[in-house]
Image 1 (cartoon, rainbow, N blue to C red):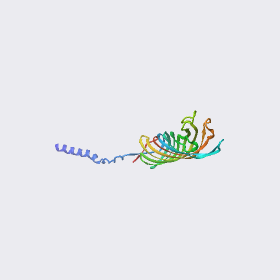
Image 2: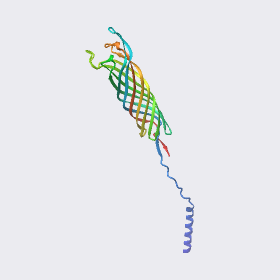
Image 3: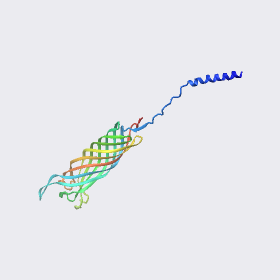
Length: 267
């Protein structure tokens, strides 16, 4: 009886272990690869900027004549000298970029308030005792961009059109008598001038859709004739044109917010 019980137990264990032996081994699953993220510069963006600028301006008298009772007709022409107008600038920008592989293309419009001012004494004999002063109070840029991206870091170049708003005046440096004190503004002129622009910048994505950049721009503003009008109670006969040539340089720090997804997955 005991022998029979042992044999039956062995038989039951064999039957129970057979299905387990038939089970397939658990398959090996490779761990999922690490997902790397890279900044995608595509999309619309808006931002703000601030920094400084300087503008080199040179004045030349456009030839004109006045009639003097004692001397008759007197002709005037010649250079008046140059000065650098410098100061602060701040504003905003809006643009759109699209990225293909590592190359980034874009268009942008920028508008800035500015306070670039400067002056120099006139070297023209006619205007001895006068100084010329200029001020740029507005700067606009309309540019295209091309850049190359290393993930979160972008280097770019830009070029296009520029526009500035200029104000000019001449003022008295010595006192000329009652009613004409030192600093008396004798004549004024103004213009909106268009030109070309080139620039370059470096930008870094710092957080979700935010980026910081530093940018340098040079504006080729050419030469224009500007009409200078004297105060009627002063010497209206001296109304004349000044041929003024200028360029502008700017360095600004920029912060941008980009709309859309900040990263794309790469395996």
